[in-house]
Image 1 (cartoon, one colour):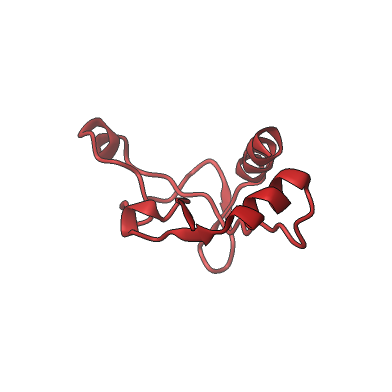
Image 2 (cartoon, rainbow, N blue to C red):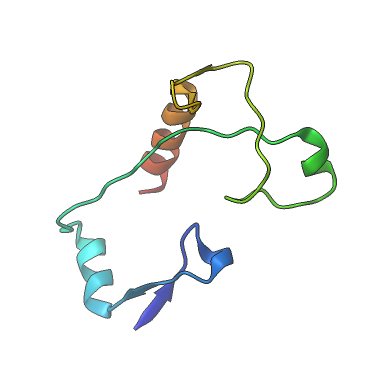
Amino acid sequence: MINLYFMGYEKGYTIQMTKQDLIDLKEGIVDYNGISYYMSKAVKHDYISKGDAINATSPIIENPHIKSSDWGWGIDPVGLRYSLTSLYERY
């Protein structure tokens, strides 16, 4: 088994993959590849200047430059486009 880390690595999450999984991915024959993009988050500048890493538990603030849904989630089409472009370029 090969351990591949993803965005939850700081919490110790790992994805277990076999050699066959890597062969299938290399050949481009995966059954499904998906992405969930719910919202973007903004963090106060002084939090970053202290040298703290930004992660899922970072204190967030409302982003005044984007609209929010009824649930208070930021609606950020530019962030979605950036994420999709990054995924496209990487994979």
